[in-house]
Length: 155
Image (cartoon, rainbow, N blue to C red; front, side):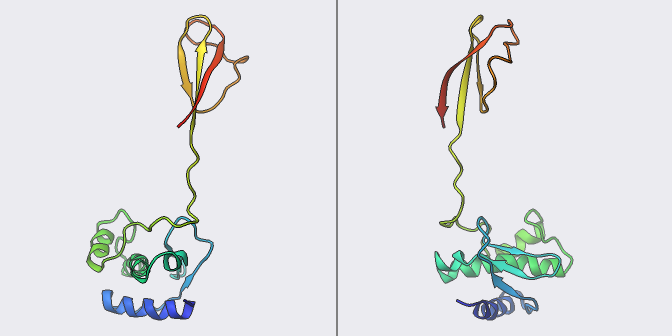
């Protein structure tokens, strides 16, 4: 699908769902990774992640475009256009837009976290940390003893 075809479809969907025309450009943007689309407040153009069409169906693309059109029309009408605003939530449900974009193949996956357990050599207290610390530099707050690494877990 080309940008011209996307513009034509978005104009049709805007008239059908909102009864208002789309007077600004809507284009595919390959740099988008974690979002389905983005509405720009300054110049009112809309970027759409092309993977919403390539990896999913036309119905998913329509829901993502309707989501961005909700931002567009509410912002131009000077009403609540943010995700947390009641106007936005009501309009999104009314037109059938998606609240969240589905995860694509380019969505970053979170790294597994690790937990490091340290044990005081003197009093035996165990502390758990996400980040390492220098056991030669830091001492136990309870007794002043030195720490040893007990184990490293991956969550």
